[in-house]
Image 1: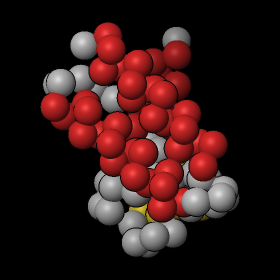
Image 2: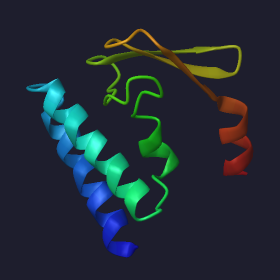
Image 3: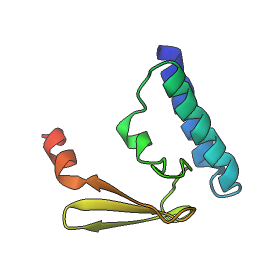
Length: 98
């Protein structure tokens, strides 16, 4: 379990490094991280989970492969690959910090 979490973190770091030069490779790293999580029944941490599109499962990096905005208490991240809008509550994040 611990090894799987480490591998997921490493894959997301690699995706972060490659997103500017090769977005397809970054998406492949995110896909592999998802598969490791499913195989070993390990949850991907929420801050990393927001980086994967819910529709096409590609890696999203604000400004490069996704656009990001806030609207009425929601963080809206739009995937540039498929156009899907992924919404995350800002209120829930504020409550957890307290």
